[in-house]
Image (cartoon, rainbow, N blue to C red; front, side, top):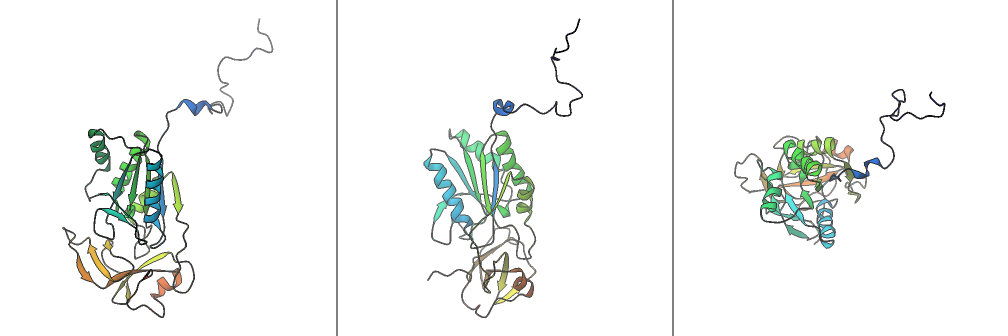
Length: 254
């Protein structure tokens, strides 16, 4: 005889929510790392934020691996325009970032987090490797970079980060166009004119500087009057650099 108030021992297959775990049932699952992408135009403080994140984690006893791809200084370091810098591991075109972590392990060093500056220059495959580190090794990965190139098109590395990142965060420091409107577009300026064609990767600053082009197999630096200037959409489309453009860039502290 079956009593009316008997309860079935298993989930009711007719219940549409029967496959949803009860609240708190995921607490026993292992933690996973996060893949975060902080992005914005030049001069908005991405490298400064990358250095601050590294500093904050290190103060809590966590050990990080700091990576960079094509820093503006040309050296294997993260350098900020306000004068801060930190030595970093340069990521090459064929670098497997997972292998960099394995090398740290082989030296007996634990890796709790990874900071990557200029992440827009990573290949999509390298971004996939960072996602694997977050998921499989439970490492927190913090990427910093520019979303779009001088043609206003997404960098391949940035596009893959938009697709895979757990968290996307625009850097909140506002950069202004010369007209006073918020600037979003990184115009490449050659001899005082906005250029629309050329290598996607040309590393320069917002001042007249030495540049590095992806066209050179050895990335040999050559002197050129190339710089970048952040513009609003209207003036980026028009190629209008404003009333004063000679001999200085978007940021000048002296």
